Image (cartoon, rainbow, N blue to C red):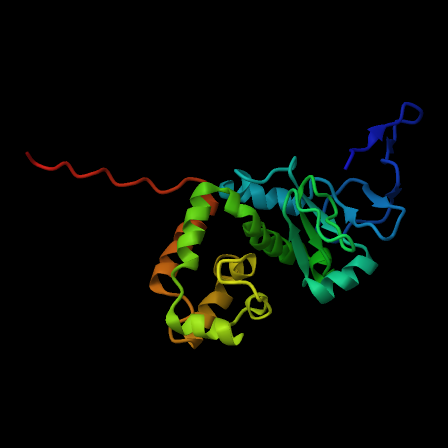
Length: 245
């Protein structure tokens, strides 16, 4: 989306074509400048350089290695699109950069990674939104070689008990239960987000399943993933032992 330009007449920002400057007060907890709002109510409302997105990236170098203000945005969908999004996609949707989406429900901006927010609770509560943004950005982390290696190993390490629950649609994750895709698809990232971004839910399921929801190998991988998000640095490999001649 084009950035507002400064009008030489009165010094006020001029919105891009199809937008008007919305003078409404931003949601509680946000400190935003004037927000461009589309005149066409079928289009989403975007808040450029959203403070929650900026905070998540500042706190997680592993994410900021892959996402930035230049390639990622947060979009608040209008009421019409939100109603459909809530019904079909949940409280928010991560649109990968380059994904145009279906013809009848296109991505808000295929040139960027877009986190499109449908839930009013997320729109109004910065704390909930921060947790949701943090978790959904993990959808796009497969482009990171180190993360993708960990994810691949994770998806190959389910317990027999959890694989059976997946086949029966009886896991702890709605994304997985409603998916017809094989293990390893994007829906199965719920296991990763559910432990890292909402660790209580992951641990609760692990306890209820008597430690069969996640294998020990998967728990070790999740700890590595969480550390990588915080540092942006893969762990150093131990030096190879020299063999005595």
